[in-house]
View 1: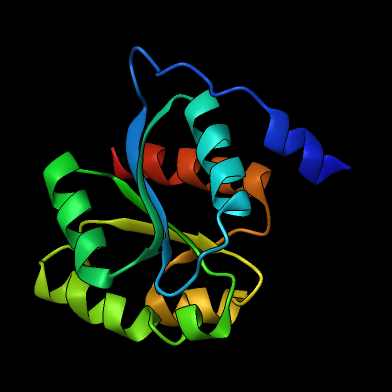
View 2 (view 1 turned 60 degrees about the horizontal axis):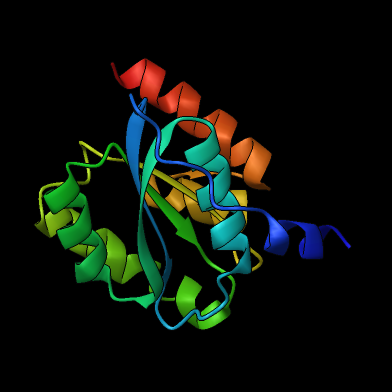
Length: 143
């Protein structure tokens, strides 16, 4: 029933003084956005400005959204093996865009483990609560 509760949660208000900006989305071809939405709302409730890139997002779209919003964090939801297989393309796009060293990447989802995040230089989170903790700590260390 917890999934039903999370589906029924109201959209939190935009934070007045955000502690950071997060671009969040599902890497292509992942169309599962229930977990992404739960994490996005939790981050927003915690004081982050969130920019939803959507589901089945191409690597270059993530790069463009991060650049236009000057985001501190890229949060990835990876729930399918084909999406996991596109992480290398995203890594290349972030390097080509000059973002790899400037950006905090957090990820989670059914198709990834801590080892996958480590190989991308990302931080792995098991659930929305852990994702919020990781994001807060990462932004505090960056500033």
